[in-house]
Structure formats: C-alpha cells, structure tokens
Image (cartoon, one colour):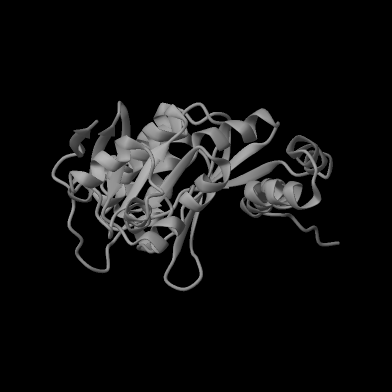
Length: 304
C-alpha cells in the first residue's frame, strides 16, 4: 500500500492562508458592523419652526426629537432674515431710512444727524445689533465676506452702526457666519452639532481658521462644508484632518458644482482640529476675481 505524504511547504501555505482569511473575516465583520451604525440628524431651524407652527415650547419639541432618537442637529450659517426674526440684530436699507426722514417718521435725532451729514446712502444697508456677542461676530463676519472697502462703522450717539455696500434683498438672504449662540443651545439641549459652514469667494487661510475658531469648545459630531469649490482640494482638507486626529473622513462632490467635505469629530472642537483646517483655505476657488480688503479694520466715523 502506497503512503501519501503532505509537503511541509504546502501545509505551511494552507495554514498561512487560513490565518489570513480569519483575520480578513474579522476585519470585514468590524467594517460591516460600523456600516450599520447611523447618525440621525435634523435641522435645528426646522425644529424651531415646527415649535412655532404648533405653538409649543422649543424645549418640548427638542425633547421629543431626543426621545425619537435624534442625536445631532444641523446648524447652518445665520442670515439677516433670521436676525430680523430673533431680534438680536436688525438690518435697514438706506432707502428706507431716507424715506422715513423725508416723510417725518424718522424721529431719532441721532439718525437724523447721520442723514443731515450725508452718511446715509440709499444704496447701502445698515446693521444694528442688540446683543453684544452677536454684534461682535457680525462685524467680524461682514469684514471677512465684504472687505473693509465695503464696510464702514459709524457711531450714533455712542452706539455703533455697520454700513455695508450691498444690495438689500440679496443681503437679507446671504450667509453671514456660524452662530455660536445656536451651537451652544444645541449642546445645552443634549445634541451634538452637525456644523454647516458655507464657502464664499476670495476665502483666505485666515478666514478658514476663523470658522474653526468659532467652533472651539462646541461638541461637534461632523462638519459638512458646502459651496462652490474644488473637490480635490476639499479632499486635501479631509486628509489633513485625518492625519491630525486619526479620524476617518470623507470628501464627496455635492449636487451640481458644489462640494462638501464631511469631517467626523468626537467631543468638543479642539485647537489641533482647528489647525488642521489650514488647507481648507484652498477649498474656495473664485470663478471670477473679487476685490479684497487690505485690512480687517473698517472705516469709522461718528455722529451725535
């Protein structure tokens, strides 16, 4: 009877293949388990609007969303349309101020003095703030988006008024900046923030870092950048974040010519995460040249 012998090299190859398949199997299992984990998010503005429509307290609606399994609330950049509703700031058109002046309805002598001095222009818009923190962020954000050439700070009886060379109707709808008060309110309600900063023309490295500075100390689950830009450069930002934090990230083209980068984040936004945004300054690729400021300091004048 003939005996068969297995070659030791063949046995070793089979053993190595078996061990490798077991390792790969466990890795695949871990990936598939993570793929079954989802983050449920909803717009913060949408919940507040729902509360207003139903006549319910905002805290009650937020609590119901929490019970339904919502873990994060999306916070978008603020607009003056929102400010006119929440009362933290207001924007007036120069044409409206002049119309009130000439009709005798502009009673405040400080504003009348500005008109008399020729500082109110019908084609400009004027911003006043009722909340100190909101006003400070507004002034910073307006300078970044419009430049010092288009932003002037006037003093009306000891209170500052920001004058901006902009089209009023479009100005109301323009994204201004991430609202720190809304992000803190989302955290206070027990949710993580899904931040939605927007891109804009002529964005500089300092402008990008300012976005991350605004999120310092905020518990952020993910950041979704949106706006016209170069998808390849957005991926570079995600790679920078991955190297600094060891977090998985993804970059993908959004609809049309928009680009979005999703950067998962655990816990509060830290300085090292903000520093990783340095390459994000390349996300904005203006389709046309735009005049930019030479200085962050606006022109100032006073009245009254």
